[in-house]
Image (cartoon, rainbow, N blue to C red):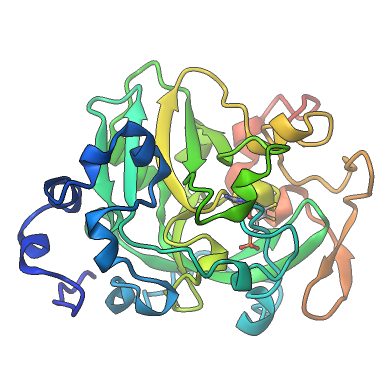
Length: 322
Ligand code: MTE
């Protein structure tokens, strides 16, 4: 349920006008297409920038938990999950938050383009008014063979697909992270193909499990979790769960994802969890719980086969596992 509350950071014009239009009036969008693709922008709106502690969507939390998605293990304590993260734009280590001091979560524009009825661009808070937030408990399995269990808050990705109204030729959704090396220092590292890109087939994106995450542990997601918008696909390895999304492009071509581009022999487009298909350099048969250090057997599709196995029927021997 969305309760519209006026918050301190809002100015009257923002109350009456869609966020993207309002920002363009302020001259921000006029700064050029390259800046738009970046999502995190400099310019006159800088005064309204907010960081981790002052998320304007805080009043939407906590959202009701959807009881359909249950865990077979305890939720990972927030203190632990908050310091074991992957966000290469900021750090190649696991404690990412201290490297995110320049990251700002507003303004944040989300572009929807490609093979759609009508391309659109909307501010994250306008997007949040069009969807219903809920909490889901999901297992989270990294290709590095560690795992955790996380109470994400967000909305079904199929709702964003419906909002986009893709044309009949659209087969994939390509997603892109913001690009701004002033904010994300490792984006200056020319060894990597920035921005981070991921993709799903339209069938995967509209599967009920595909979840666009805005929050975690009952509040807006702290920066290191990929605020203000990231993907979670719990049946796939964690690298599919792209953070800091600013663009969804509907396309008829299979997107080249970030890790596939970096190291295609080890990481592919599909990345479905399978204990029987090892990574070229290590086994995927078991995983380590980041809290207890306990090892448990990895489950096919990370235990979500009942929801997603049909998507891949007849292709079990194809390259859908990495
Ligand atoms: N998204 C972006 N933009 N940059 C990244 O480096 N890392 C991925 C994924 N999304 C990554 C990203 C990897 S490898 C994993 S395992 C998950 O984020 C980690 O999510 P978590 O930090 O919430 O556990």
